[in-house]
Every structure is written in C-alpha cells, then in structure tokens.
Amino acid sequence: MKLIIFILAAAFLLSVPHAALADDGLESVVDKVQKKYEQISDFHADFSQEAEVKALNKVQKAQGEVWFKKPGKMRWNYHAPAEDEIVSDGNTLWYYSQEEKQVIESPLSKVSDTETTSTLLSGLGKIKELFDVSFAKAEGLDGAGSYLLDLKPKTEEEGYNKVTIAVDKNTMLVNTMYLYDPYGNLTTVNLTDISVDKGVPDSLFVFNVPDGVEVIKPPSIGQ
Image (cartoon, rainbow, N blue to C red; front, top):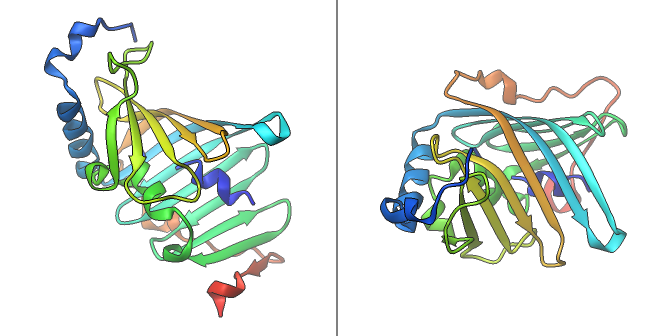
C-alpha cells in the first residue's frame, strides 16, 4: 500500500572542515533544530523520493509537494508517477488514489507510525523526546556541509528502525531524510524550495471526496 510512501516519509554548499564543529557540538545542533521547528507554524516544500526495494531489486521514484501546519495537519500531493494525495486535518487521514478511484479514510491516531513520522517534518520540536540522536559521521557533516544526524526512535517502530537527516547549517531546516527499514531497504527524500510561515490556509488540509470515488474504512478502524 502506498501509505508506506508517506511513512517513508515523513519535516522540514561547500565542504566544511572538521574544526567547524568546535562551536557546534551535538547538543548545540540538536537544540538549534528543535528550537527552529518549535517556532515554525507552517511548512511547504517540493520533494523527490527514491525507495530502494531490495526484494524486487528496483528503485521506486516519486515526486510532488508537501505542506505541514500545526497542530497535526499535513498534505502530500504526488505528481509522479501517479497523482495521489495524502491529507490529514489533524484528526483524520485520507489516502486518495486517483488511478484506482479510491480513498482510504482512517483516524490519524490509528495509523501506524504517524506520530513519529509527522514529527520528522511538522514537529522536530520533540526530537530529543522521541529519538536518540547522534552524528552520523565523526565530523558531523555531509559532503555539502549539512549537519548529518542519526535518529533512532526510543520506541519500536514498524516502518523503520533508523532515520538519518541532513540539516542545512544556515537555516537549520531538514533538506534530506534517509529512512532505513528492518529489511535493509533505504528511502531517500530530498526537500527543495522550502518555505515556512507563509500562512497556509486550513482549507488546504480538508479532503473533499470526488464524485465516483469509493471510500474505504479499514474494518478494524471503521467499526
């Protein structure tokens, strides 16, 4: 199910010498990221995604736009390879497949991994509460000069067992996520054209079921 694309989701330069971390130790970087995301009210970015599926020996690609707004609202519009939408108003999650003419509707609280995944981009203000954080490399930086942080969930997650995020040194915003699942698969999500606090309207997070579209509520949730 393509909800796994959302889960592998889940936020929000020149090479720098190692000495640059003298004033930017792990605790300092984490505090800056947490403070940044605590202050953000809404978020928009274009995204591209590559999922390496070892069992199929293939790479699945997707791209589109993502919006977040506190508290708990989000929208993922996939433009390729299919026109899919994942929308939440903070209470209900809708996954709409235009090709299949179906929408899956579930209470957000009942969807596996949504709390941690939503935190990755729309929260990160809880980064120290939800994750054990370390530098992914000894120098703490990737080749583009972004901070590279490993996040390991403090509670067991079904969708993934580790996330690595790249954080822009200047904006303290996440620009890349690497998600590792228990089966050795890797999904990379790149964020570009990031904008914050532009006054995204609540109406963007309301999903109106198109005519002729079947609404599916999973039995264990809808009963």
